[in-house]
Length: 323
Length: 261
Image 1 (cartoon, rainbow over the protein chains, first blue to last red):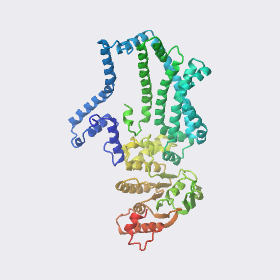
Image 2 (cartoon, each protein chain N blue to C red; image 1 turned 90 degrees about the vertical axis):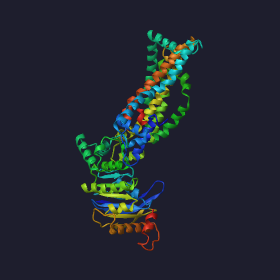
Image 3 (spheres, rainbow over the protein chains, first blue to last red; image 1 turned 30 degrees about the horizontal axis):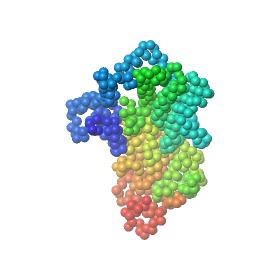
Image 4 (cartoon, helix red, strand yellow; image 1 turned 30 degrees about the vertical axis):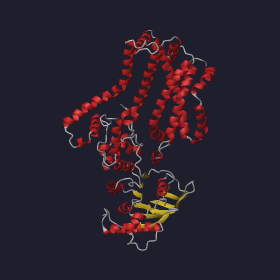
């Protein structure tokens, strides 16, 4: 099974070997042709001796085909389930009242979109997530960097931050409402708190785990403090930072729902509550689907924005990450 | 001239790693430091590099006391320690950031050519083999033209063929500008093939035990009887440095080779 699909794992193992022992057989797996060649080689080892041209091109086209069938494979299950449910409701096996069929969900979305409601809710939620995320990331990065860089600050600051982290963030809601009112500020604050902790932890952990040996290289070239940060620490920390950002964003999306549950007149969370109170399951599912799409899209945006900076990584998933 | 005067080091945890090590090393000389583990070889090298400060004594290079990394002193570690986010060319140019871009590019290109990796200029470090990566590290250390180049067991992680190849290559590169080379090694062969002088150290605490001059013309033939006799002298000294009672130098050569460390 593994052998048939050119799984990223295979490519990774292959290149890993090349790096370790002697002159690598196919060192760069970056250009498509080479990657295809590497695939062909990992698929069928005896083919090494007889790499005649038609063979290779045939494999190249089938590999190209597979690259598109890969994502399609992932869609098979949800689309299949949706289709099955649609047919079940259409055939009268279920009335689809509590679990509305896909067409009904889609119709609800279209209806909301036509009236301009949908974009209003999406913009409300997106702007909350965005401002909460930005505040959380800035604060998390700042405090994480301070705690990671200065031992004294870490001993002073970290225990308190860790204690605060142990508090379930939802527990802040009543306090935030009392302090900041029931409008936007308290919502953004809750999201920012959710984003802060993973970013703080990620940045601090990443700085603490920068390889001493690499830092020593910087020292032998007499880098000043700022140059050391710019030329050694920042690039070394970047991969972990991107992960922290993505985790933070995920929590931001989680907390926006909690924030919008605590009394909102617009936003996707409001659509959820409204759907529950007025008994409109299609609206609830529509909001959930939009959450999924927005969450995935924003995560993907971070991924593609940072991919060029992380091309150098030699990691198990490194090569498949960009695709 | 590099002068080491009664250099000693006691680590904060109380380990007495090095005691009163003194030596004068001439410009352009190649010195190998050899000894069993725990005899302070790396400690000494790090003190010369200015990475760690000696607890006692001084390191001076042409009347400048070395207490921090110095522009005229380069170091090559046991691992290549390339920066994985920079291309091979950028890694080599890492220490040249003060130069204008054009001059830097030219120097890097020449160095790449010199270590035989011109075709790898834009590769990532992860794409190199162990020997290639170490050659990049050598180029990176040599490109700012240091007067003293320190090497801390630079080839010990490589296989025997690559090691031999790189030893010859290093000598070849050394011949360009003739910097002082100070090489810490475990490998008697390596010490004798490269060095003008071998300093044998003894452990607990690390100190200088014996100095052996290798009066052999370069290039050296690894199979000549003279080469062998120098090797045997170094091995004998090593054995004695570890307090092994060796009755007769000639009889024990093969046993010592396997046992000294």
